[in-house]
Image 1 (spheres, one colour):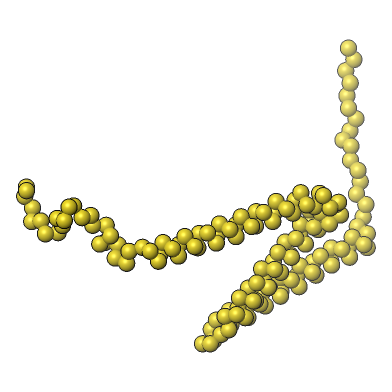
Image 2 (cartoon, one colour):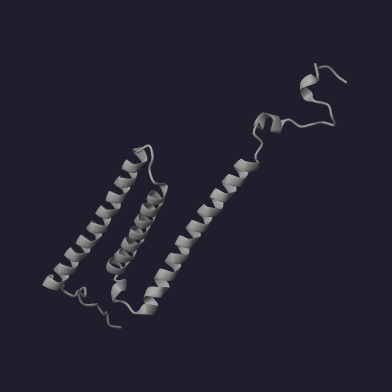
Length: 150
């Protein structure tokens, strides 16, 4: 039997970055930076408006919605660039994006349900928890009993 050995490690040399790849890196950096700065500006604006004695709640909710939309757009852009999904076929993109959207939907649904449960619990909970803990034993209250056997 003859002993066989493999050759050296198979490597493919990388080419030097082209002008096109450098432009893509700078464009990605610029887009993500601008979206982040806009989000921070809106967040700071909301912070300043809360210090005002009469601020517009509708505008605050609108700005929070815009911040959420910008964050989602940034997340999808990051996925398309850094996971190289922007260069893939549509079916490959859908196998990753649809479960991601379902996961986000699950988080929203569980938070919504949790807030609803908390509000219902607070609405229907007894106002004095000490009185709610006391148990009525057939009309005889514990606090009137002075000790000893009955």
